[in-house]
Image 1 (cartoon, rainbow, N blue to C red):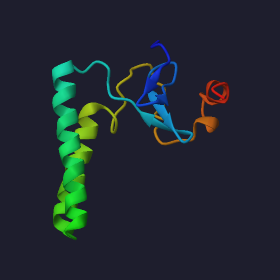
Image 2: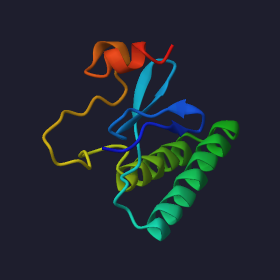
Image 3: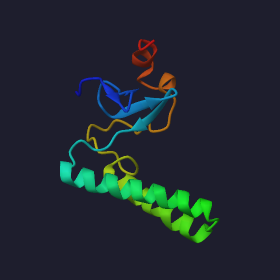
Length: 111
């Protein structure tokens, strides 16, 4: 298991699968990705997010849809969406409230 830590100032579950923002679990990037691949995909994700903002500012629904699809593709490639990157059969709890999951006791002990 991964050591608990912080991701951008947010706590990471003891198994390293999620970080918690305002009580909600968000899936971490697949740790098995090569550093260069992770860096490239992260840059792609950030560019796609900027494109979403630009499309929204320009009120361009077609460009927004394309940019959101690019965000989704990058997040799936990073392992943050789509099939889980772990292989022990544990369910995906992405976007669930930590207090309603197997992480409830761990989360309660953070305070």
